[in-house]
Amino acid sequence: MIQKAVITAAGRGTRFLPAVKYYPKELLPIMDKPNIQYLVEEAIAAGIKNICIVHRPGDIALKGYFTPDLELEKYLKENNKYEFLQSLQDIWDNAKLEFVAQTDDLPYGNASPALAAKDFIGNDDFAYILGDDLIVEEKVGVYLKKMIDNFEKYNCDFIVSTQEMPEYEMKRYGAVVPITNPSVPNQLSELLEKTDPPPSNFAVVGRYIVKNKAMDIIKNQGISRGGELWFADTLNTMAKTGIGVHEPITNGVWMTTGDPLRWLKANIALALRLPQYRDELLDFLKDPIGNR
Image 1 (cartoon, helix red, strand yellow):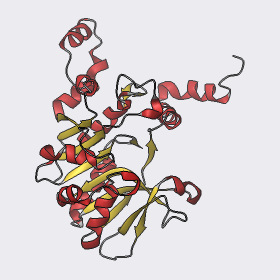
Image 2 (cartoon, helix red, strand yellow):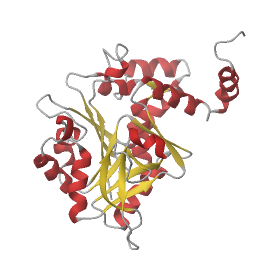
Image 3 (tube, one colour):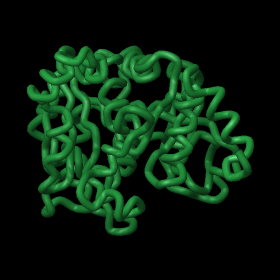
């Protein structure tokens, strides 16, 4: 059973400057909660109780956000407003969070947070969640739990999240190369980065369940294209001798939040799912800068 998750939050967020000069972009709000809280809640809902957030050097804001504030709690309780902290209380009650800095001696790339979290991971298999990717679904955690279940059912070396996309959009994303295996649905042979034409219409999403052997591969693989340490290279090595599977999102939608426009779209998408905001927001969107 997967009991550990690593969430990557060590980027500089340059596309959000100057807004994130002082704090990490993962704390930018999606409606009433910061982006990263949705990821933590997703992991907990999928049954994961030990979560490591890998942050940039010197950052104290992420740990500060997830640390209880006794003065604030006292104030909210005295004024009958504690419900505003209930979502954080649920996290404190149901999971253990650790915070690890990704030190400057580690190479640039989306596999480096795994190296930073090596002591947390230990000898266990783990979930790997990229901080810019949000999955919007009716019930939080259902999709990630499905990934975990299939990882165990088919004895995968890894399972990666995907979403089917129109071909004209695939040039922006990595894609999986599917192979046919009646015994293992959605098996893949490789992940390819932004090829034209793409090998499939299944775009790679930042959710992975991997066996612990990935750690030795990351340590030894070295940097590749663009001078980066890529998690996809690790998975491709594993796929050569083991079983790699992709899990398409079917009852939800993937939204990336890594730049201001897509972050705004994620805010709108979540707001439209909330009855208290939906009608007023739809009315506003009909003519957002017109006469009112």
